[in-house]
Amino acid sequence: VRRSAAASAGGDLQCRAVSTIWRKLVAGARGAAVVRVETVSEFGLKRETDYTSAADLARAVLAQLPEGSREVVADARVLEEDGSLQLSTQLHMRRMRAAGMLHCAACGGFYAGRRGLRDHAQIKHRAPYEEATEAVHA
Image (tube, rainbow, N blue to C red; front, side, top):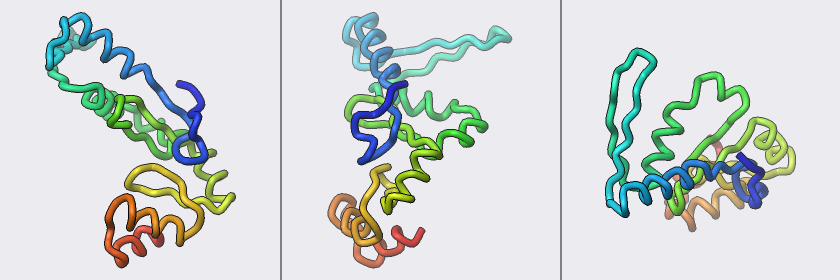
């Protein structure tokens, strides 16, 4: 996990471990379109899961984050382009809010004030005016 180069635009941390693991799994599967991962529990229970992309694998990793992680991580999402994880800490969210930047729940980015977030929602997410205005007040 490393500091994100674009912390002012989104999460303050980025984890590329999942996308690196994905590339190694694909190489091991000799370029197959689907990678099968077998996990074994501490009780010996085997489970096989098929993944078709780094993003699929990253979503599975996010689903396994412990509940206690919410004390530190306020927002966690998968970047679809490469399957890396974008994380926003509670501290980062507070700092951005103090600087007048509002968080977009749809994409994780931060935008200057209510108007900035509303305009972003309308343009980037194609939300109608009413829906974009509701997102600002959420």
